[in-house]
Length: 287
Image (tube, rainbow, N blue to C red; front, side, top):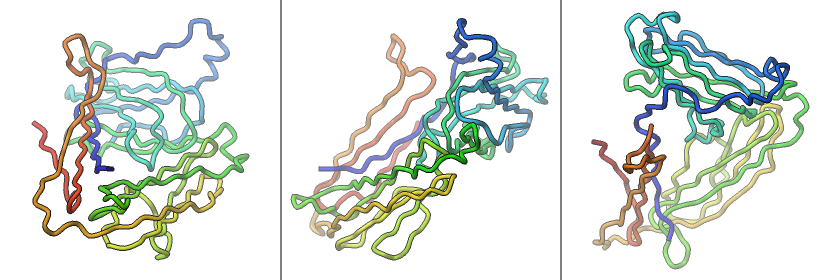
C-alpha cells in the first residue's frame, strides 16, 4: 500500500565555517586559472544579497560567500548562502550551505568547490526573517547551449493510499520529474484529463472520483520539447464509515556524530497511510 509522504527540508542549517572541498594540489596552474569563481556578498540587508552572479557555465566552479565588514556588514548579522535541493523546478545536484558572519573564524569569507550542470539553481538565505534574500543562477554549456538538440527526459509518479484493486482511495498525488543534461530545463507542463497543458510547479492532487489521465512534457533552454508521457489511474471515494485513524511514522536522517547528534542539519520525513477513507492532511509541530 502506498502512503502519503511529506518531506521537511533541513529546518536549521549551521554548516562548518570552511568548505570541505579543496583544490587538487596536482592540478596545473592553467587548469586552476580556467576554473570560474562565483562570488556572493552580503551586508546589513535582510531582503537581498549585496551582490550575486546571475549566470555561469557548466563545469567546476569555486563558490565564494563573503559577509564581512568589507562587504558592508556593520551589525555582525549572520547570513547563509544555501542552494535549494528539494524543488523539481530547479537543479538539485549541488550541495551549498555556507553560514557566514563578520566575526566567525574565517572573518566572514567562505569557499566551496562545486561542479555545476546546465539549468537553473535557486539560492537563498535560510535564517528566519531573511526569506526575501533569494535569487536564481542560470548555468549554460560552455557554448551557451546552442548545440543542444536532445530533448529532456520526463517521468511521473502517482502516490496515495490504494485499495486491493489498485485504485487510489480519496485522492492521488502526481509528481513529475524532468532532467536535461544539455541546456537545462526551461518548463515542465501537465495536462489533466485533456483540459489543456498547464505549468507544473508542485505535485498535483487529484481527488475527483473516476478514471484520470495525466499527460506531461518538458522543454529545455534550447527549445527542445520531450515527447508527451502519460499515466492513468483511478480515484475512488473513501469509506464514509471509516473509524480507524491513519498510521503515521517519522524518520530522521542526516550526518551524525559519535553521540548520535545530527551535524549541521537534520531532515525529517513523515509518512502516513490509511486504508479506509484515505489521508486528508499530514501535520507537524516543530519544537
